[in-house]
Image 1 (spheres, rainbow, N blue to C red):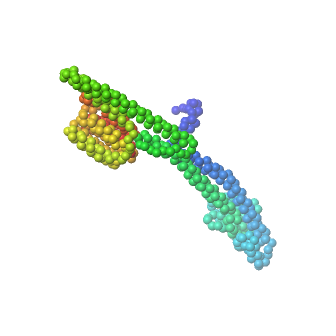
Image 2: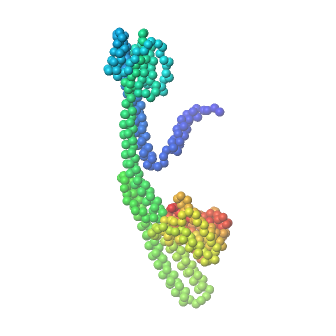
Length: 455
């Protein structure tokens, strides 16, 4: 397959996009980790550059200078050896080397030098010292800088002897450079620790704001006071203002509906009084049925409106609540079974949660002869499934039944007493707790209503 010019021109762009995707996958997702990375990466890069460009040059320069001085001292000893004669010449040379140069010098009989040793992996000392001996002494030599010993051995072949010199490694090698590295790493560690503490203090108000928003979404009262940087405090105050506006809107809606219910109940009472004066007949009975239906619809709508009234959040024993619902179902002549796995405690508004589950169980009792209630728990959520063996609901219509006053007579054969608000109230209560209500297929062939609530 041949590549065109456009393919070649597009390769860098595709490579860069692929690299960006890989970096995005590998990069940390949390704000604290990313902020810490922003602080650490430049610091590490700066210190790496300083270490490479400064320390490498400094180390190399100092090592070459020390090697040059050591070589000069060895050359001076060779000159002294050439000038001294007599039986005490070697002793004098050894004394001068030990007292003045801190070296151990031995004059060996002439002979071949030992074979060359393998060069070390990091051979800066071997390279520097070899260059200096070759340029200043200009005689055959043998060098041993390999190993962890604190001494180095140098042998120089003279016309009538072999000069063996043992010197300290520090005399030819910048051995204290690690102190600078330790200081640099130590200060970097202290700075990183300080940066971590400050970043954690800056991230903590953001996490508290997130917890407050999540608690408010679950219908729980959470004490929150803005703190941290100015921008975080501004976001916190904006959240508090939004929370107050939502609470005022909910309170106004509840108050308005209470007033409307009072007025409507007054009118319905007048209707009942008027109907009581009418003689018994078909028309009177029909009007009484209409008034009763209006009364039921009004009560159902008020229950729907009261679903989000602020009720104290307490620990609810789901096992006891489901047992009570089972007992109610059995009193209506329906067989019921409960299966519980996991923890049966949940922080919720007890009356609202009971209304939610009672609506689902009542809906199952209305259309099925046998119901099964299952409670399951995972790491973050508690799920309650209510299964019946009724006619079920078509998948295409399951989203419509959550609409207020929506009736599905053909699918569920609803009786006249149903106002069409049961599932709407259940979903409204579940969502006020941060969860949801969904519909699915029951294993027994009917409908499954599932409530999923956060822990």
